[in-house]
Image (cartoon, rainbow, N blue to C red; front, side, top):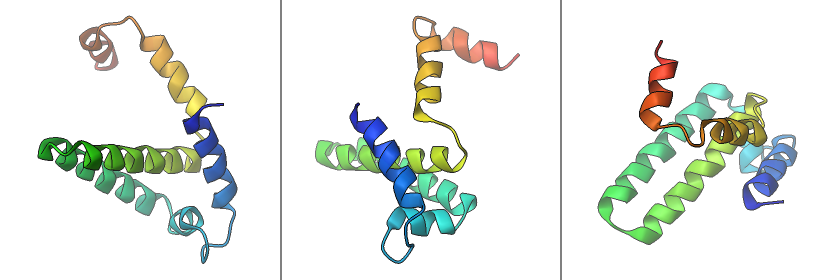
Length: 104
């Protein structure tokens, strides 16, 4: 089992924990809009870190982004394997071709 799969399982377990002792439970209790907002904030922080040129900061923000993405996916009952399978489906397809297929 890889790191993201283990993290996905940990998040699923912590979602049912006490919001007083679990960040995941607390964020989940605040609802989907707050989870989405937090993911957006982490995305912006990742972009800022990428532009700052500081590799360590970018690594940390990217980890935060993946963590919050997994929280949001779990809240919507979307398994990581579903996302990975979609990436597998797209493998070998030009990004321009794939994007054009979604806009039609």
